Length: 135
Picture (cartoon, rainbow, N blue to C red):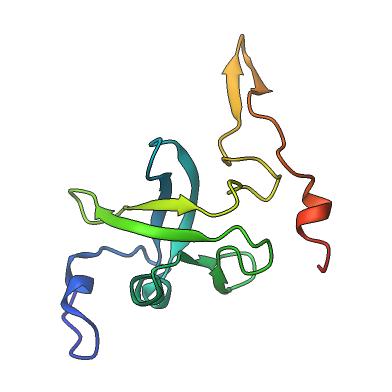
């Protein structure tokens, strides 16, 4: 990636895909549990760093997605880690409200392959209809 004089130097170590995105894994800072995977573009990375709260790029809506903006379940950044290839981020977060998934669960990774079929292994903590009343 060619250095850009208008971007911080840390962008030089990030490898974005052809769509200008990099995967970001949100991990609970205390338990180490993987909460979710989302995508970030340069603007999302920059805003996450400047605000200390997770901001992602919504591929379906083609816009910035400020985690918790509509649900109230923000992710406060504790640390940001880059893998050895420079193409995946891990966000160590404090999950405000304890719910990371739009299904009302702690984690988006709530299904486990058991005896050849996917089974829910994590309970719904709050009905999504209650979380997203105004949408």
